[in-house]
Image 1 (cartoon, rainbow, N blue to C red):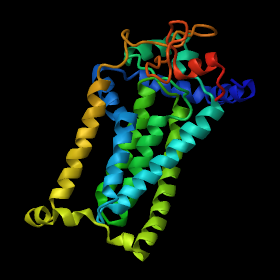
Image 2: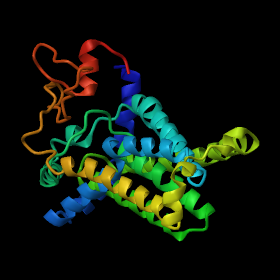
Image 3: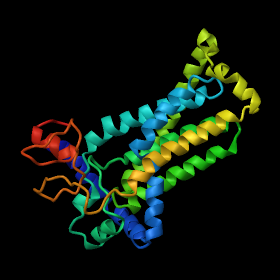
Image 4: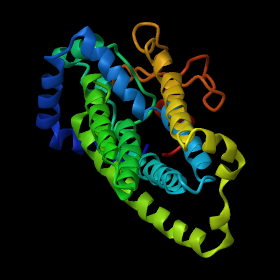
Length: 297
């Protein structure tokens, strides 16, 4: 790791320490079983297991003239947010997770254990979950607002709850989620205007004639056009349950943690996939696996 870049994460810790700890105290003081399950519910909207299938759904929506703008906006927003968060900012900031840096803070660690002691395998700043939930939420808001449908305002509310859940679960600093929200909003704006450009291209070429709805015309006619919205809702619900149900058993003592134990005992989740094989028989998180292999971020 580059020590010069590492100081950026440490600087963020120092600058926002008072604010971050105040928010941790706020959420820690309201911990109970109901709120913990509620936090796990909302945090699912930013999980990879939810976001990646949403991209696939977005691709499908692009083949239908009626939903094409929704599909393109989702795809572009998620792509931009992923690049900014995971490719640019996280490797620049190199901010360590709070459950690693605040292990000496008895109050914080009590709240971390009380919230289920969840863990991630990468850096903390900005919050990827918040970015993902926000970019999807505002991408949908802009499209629904364009169609003059008020339901679009529901999605930013969900994104705000997702942001709050990340701090409640003690896996992110409040400053992480604030930055994630800003990145997500910016990504949605960029995604929306990229969609506008692509739609102009479609309207001026034969691409605009592509419409998979023609294949389902009989079903559409029989249901007065209501089949498509119902199918989309069912698909999103299925995607959510696919991501949410496994998350209920995450965390706790059964989690395989990173074996790193130098300047702090790493509570990050160890990576178990083929891209991160064991080193000397030990499993490490994404950060320390790369560090031990001498791979620069």
